[in-house]
Image (cartoon, rainbow, N blue to C red):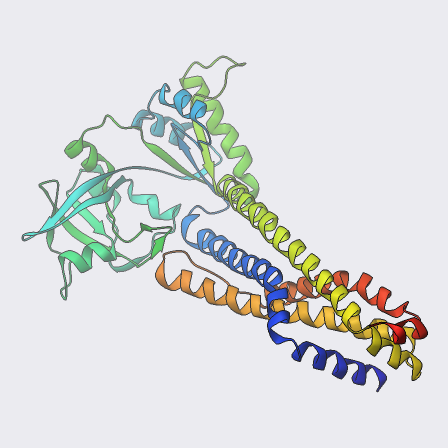
Length: 405
């Protein structure tokens, strides 16, 4: 009962100075808002990229000319490498025993048209028929082109849903012919809608057989070789087999770096974690400064409050209030202020994150544990800020407090 009465007195004191209380909490509000907004965006991006961007399975990898480029020096070195060719693909198919599926893909932006309607800059992929075995490509209608169509360089295409909506509104595109840079292709399949990732439209795309692509648009582009191992545990050995095959084909000295690169889901995930980790560190720095400033402001206001209410403290002590009761009261005031600032910050952060998701392609994820952690952080700031003022108030002697002006 004593603590309930102490809480009531603390709430009454805060209500008596609402404007001052709110202004005191601005630092905490800004810090918590930043935490909730940025963590919600990062969590949403992590989940969305893992689901939509990392189309490679845990047992698949890609052999490319470039690999994963993280700086200018790596890019300049990769540009000097030899292109990967269909002969390299055939060698890997013939020699790699740990590779279950081996496909290839090449892409460039092309114009796609149908009866006067035209889409520019459509990513058109030339791929092998088994590309669906190693990438998460699902069909919404029709079929993917087969090995016979690939082998005979048939002019067939599988298009994305946005290409369908733009060129074939209200009609089934399967069986009709589109033109890709002026060359006619029969539509045999429609890809399932995938959405947009970081502003990149995954549904504005088309797939055609790789030999057809090279016959129409030329073969002077490096091929990406997509490989699936027999399981996640065999990914490393399969990758080492491919490395040995390619180094032998390139006559690479034993002490020289690989003249090619690998892309795996794990490597992509690590790269993304580094990027998102940097954003999180920046957020932690900014919000940490805001929370520290907010805590200092709360401490200063509480010290002012102790000075203003010295006589009140003296009266309460003279009437029998214990030091612990006085200390708890001021601790409650500081904690309640910070917790209120945390609640406001959570609401604002959730609102900002919702606006970001609504008016931009960036996904967000507001998780219950994030709200709990933000409120706990704000409460801890209040506890730390109220510690010294509450101890100062509790140490006041009743006689000296009653004599103060």
